[in-house]
Image (cartoon, rainbow, N blue to C red; front, side, top):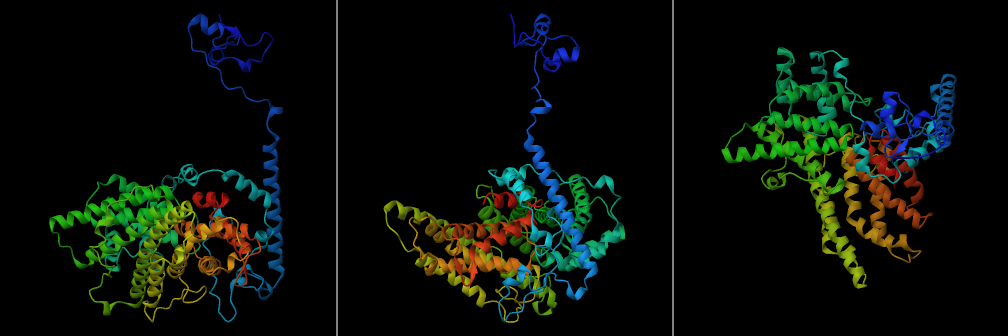
Length: 570
């Protein structure tokens, strides 16, 4: 017979689910109460809720801390607004004031780069790194944020992200009035970064939509994605900028049949780039893999069938190949090497570097020449970086083998590392003489693509000696003259310079570039842990790493779960 859990009186809340639903008295027997046993019903007990006085008081304390932080921020914001209203504009110390932390990075005799307005995102917070609110900080709120991510995997945080809000049902249908403004601004915001659609093709698509309206076809889907990408990349864009047009394009895309056509692959590529812009890393990786697979099938079909495409389509396929190839190896080499990759790599020898859509290079407009000059430089630099990362993996294996043998080899002078450094030097020397760009922070014409190229260059320099620097930091005991060792200093210089480029030029970076900055910050923090007062070329390594971590976390928190989790666990 069932045995009662307690002889005394218990509250009705302890009754089984069957007795509760049927509203009969339950004797609370275990594993079956008398009523369920007598009638052959299933007897399940719900988990007993804690009494009100048993609720952990830590939850109330956390809420109280968050409320106090919010009141503190509102009070400081109110003081700032009152100060601005009573102080002349000439007396207000904004981002260009000498007291701004960013000005500490300006070197004597060098003109600092213009401070671009960062694209505001509500999830990142409205305070910029020089505002009084940011300077005051809120340590309790930051501690709660770090405690949430502490010990968690970045991939798990990405998987738990909430979906995009459904904006299609809340808005009207797409209007053709957005077509021409987006097309005119596309090259300035998107075409410089990803030149996969030439002007002539884009003009043809836009004219078709303007004359016939949005319809059930790929042309309409591509134009919607162009509008979405332009809105997402323009200055002052919010988190939801372009999301409505993207969702409309995806709904249209799901209703259309898959095609082995160039415009279908371009649609997949724009979808992946939009997800990358919104830092939806897993969605981006899945969509990119689909795009690379379809592009490989398209190229294989053209090769097997002997299809002779027009010149502009061949050039767009070449540009599309290198964009997809660069993104795919970034994901595999720097995000997760266990992810599957497509077979695009087998056509790397087939395609020359991308060419513009125009028939004659001499007839290219200046802005198109600049676009493809940056793109060619970026593509060749990424190829060098891929070889550096592969060589670094080999170096790590050789270092582990040396430790097992009990010997210490000078791997910084290996022919492989010397060849990688020489390739980077040659890359800089072969840039066009009229190319208004410099590797130094704050030099050259400021642009998104120019800053991205600087960050990529210094990360490649840093990656050459990263494995050796990690070996030095792991050795025990460490000598006090550690930072005076030339190979270590040679690797520390590009790490600090890359961080200086990020702080001075304030670029709006994607999650892939932010992941590279996190890698650099991780090594700098290890250096600071070993020698807290380490000074390199007049810069305190610990303060530099702390400032870089704070700035990157303020921009990525609530925007990229991958980066936020890695920063909080660093």
